[in-house]
Length: 298
Image 1: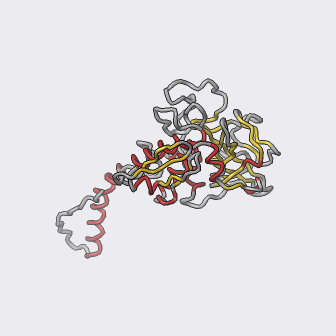
Image 2 (image 1 turned 90 degrees about the vertical axis):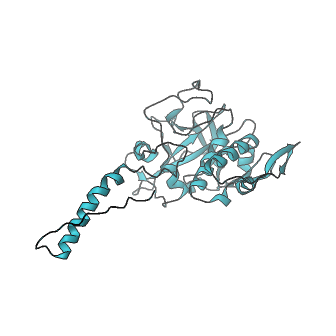
Image 3 (image 1 turned 60 degrees about the vertical axis):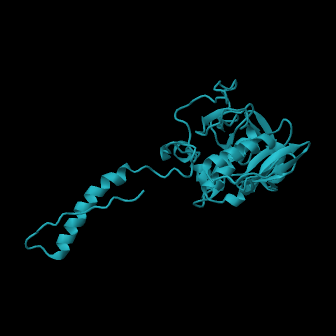
């Protein structure tokens, strides 16, 4: 938005130096500009599905680290920092399915992400993780890095979607049909993602991510995934560390089937959403148990 141009009337200030006159003119100008700046909306480009972004509802503002711990360092602009800023719905709402009904199990979540699910049964567990990754890359302007694999093994690049190509299923493979180029807009990203959700799942997501051999190297943005039909995936959405003792803890979020609100998970072993990194050979979440070897990274 173009800043308003303030034209100050000429004022005679007898006996004042030019420096004082200029200071008074600037004071008047700032007094007129300040209300306009205060009313200007915040930049919500990082989370564009929201009409308004309130930092007070972010994950970092709402979920305190465990006692004696502090949030792990995160580089500004990184996936880790972006995840930490994700908005949560106010209060303690239920998890709702894509059709508006409440999920039968309301004991698994600690909080609900303020992330729309869509009106179709598309954005399930793997799709929710794909959604977060794509949203971050789009917000960061890394359009060429937005690509995911279909279950068939075919790669779906956002750049190809922008160029006008659309996938057409042919048996167990996908062919791309040329069409008119699409505008690089947020609406185009969402249409691309709906297509990815249709053809991708935990099997494809497990194959396109890299195995993390040592769970002690866990970082926000990593996933625990069991590829299959059915399979499941949860994403590490934040981390905390004990600067003195070196202990680490992490938060997990998931979508599930049928498509539903993405939510922050409770730790079934404690009265907290935080999981201790020393969880042993298996990671037990409210609705799935993973092996430590199921850890993977984009």
